[in-house]
Image 1 (tube, one colour):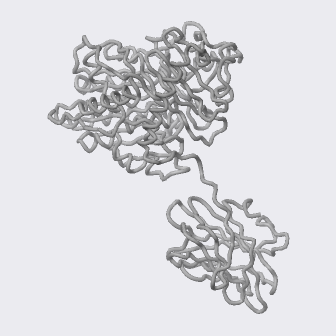
Image 2 (cartoon, helix red, strand yellow):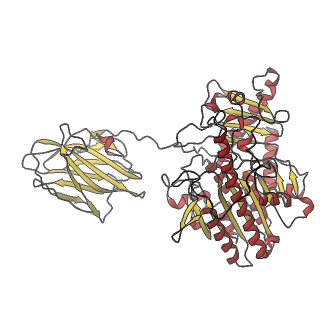
Image 3 (cartoon, one colour):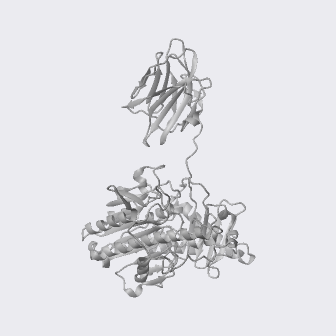
Length: 639
């Protein structure tokens, strides 16, 4: 625990270095941050010559390469949120593809803080934090917080229509970024956040790699892709059950041509993202800005690409968590370029951006890497905490794991396993992670120390989260029950929340002799009434707020029970208007019954809708309201 506290003190001390406001505004460097998608460390030609990445190689030669660059959660949405905020996901709790950065969090994100400090900011490409199926568009696509916004949700199509012309996505990004650089006043610093979609397969018609840049070609590779040492049946069967039963699908054993085609595809797309780096750097040089522009390159996560016989990422193996990570600061002496062995996390890049810009960010967990750039012997992280606990609507179970990695040892704990599944690797003697030492009695003491370290990290971030819990999918709504109120009205026993989309409410009502079939919906707190009266001649009459118009050519028998179905629609804001009324005889009738009488109802004016409050079903004169209340999100729910 003492070393853990020492780490926290080190974090605070290095973050303080970012408070460098003495630097004159006109001398502040520009920043270009390239973030690729799903690119493991091996996917660069200076690491594996089978790939073709001359611009990444040039960046590595001129700048500083962090050979131990990692992500603290290997999945795009979570990693990108961590980069935006400079915080571990155990603190910010964005652990779902659906959840956006909140408005409060966004105010402390690195682009917003830079913009407040005078930087002109641009975001282009795959933003991918939050989804509009769950959250408001302005949070999922926060265009208002940037001077230039050309951002997308998850999986943007490589094919984009621009002015009626089919264009390759990255080509459009390049053009917009270069124009932004050219148009920025010379006395104002800028930050370009270039979120390249390659080499990940994206969405759109035609599949994940639905379009290639028709103007781009690269030399063919020299032979098939190298076969990884751990891409064997034996390596696969050594994996813990938590991995073998997860979405990390088995790839070993498939036809060789299938693997070759996949690897050639990601090679081509990686090369295309490499071209974007070259084009942006050329634009900086043409504008005379290269000598005062710091360039950062990394990937949001790695990818297994056959290692241990599996595909995907998410887990804590090296191929999943280790990513390209390079920083080029032209203001530093060329003698400082080269490789650094100190561990560096994706969130450290954020802290580095803040340090470069001279903007304080004490709320961030990241540590500025500038001291290590300036001094290859500077102290880095002692160890770090990994957490992957992601809620996904998709098919297949994502690995739920956490762990601690230091220079030599890696401890992995698979959460929610019974009996508990753990792994322990000696990275110095077993860099391919083929020999799990967790069950060896001679490693029991070390294992317990790493368990305690993992628990200390978890406790620290649980406390930092302040009791907040991550999103784990829609909460199943309590089935409402009708009970009688003091005035004879039928009242729901719990709040009825409309939320987003549609809500169907049905109940039985009976027309008395000589009377009309009438029902009133009202909100108890604000007394907003939505009345529906079906007269003897079949006319639907509004009652209460709003204006409803509808008609039907049918008569309804007295002393006969009818089922009334009301459809509420909501665009995501408070309340929802009645847009449909359907009534049919109760005996054996379902909402899909063709004998039901259906009206479309138009509603205008007034506060028509139900909010998160109790709702009354109040009988009017000549009406008896029965039970059998049903509430659902579609017709099938209320059959």
